[in-house]
Structure formats: structure tokens, C-alpha cells
Length: 69
Image 1: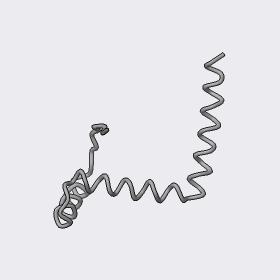
Image 2: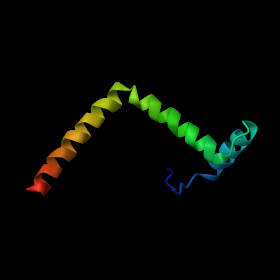
Image 3: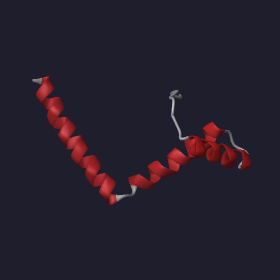
Image 4: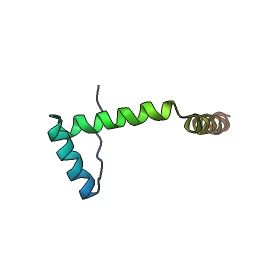
């Protein structure tokens, strides 16, 4: 399953991404998916990120509990 989304990139970044994708024999879409996957894998191993994630989950849980009452 896929989800379509629109991303606005600075012109320079878009041009560079297009060239890199073309050189790698990929579509721009494939290149962006790969880059996002690499970044998500990286943050999953980052303690600071995981601490922030736990805080957000706890904070949101409190809000959801209040709304459910």
C-alpha cells in the first residue's frame, strides 16, 4: 500500500536529488524513499530521539485520557 504526498523542495535540493537519482539509475521517487528509510533507521537508534519519542507518547496519552472522560 502507498500513500501519496506532496513535498516542496528548494530548487537546488530538487535538482541535486534528480541528478543523484538519475546517476544511480533510480526514479526521484525511489531515491526519496531510500533517503527517508535511511533517516528513519538512523533515528530509531538515536537515544535522544527515543527519549523525545517517549515524552511525546506519554504527553499525548495524558491528553487522550482527558478527552476520553
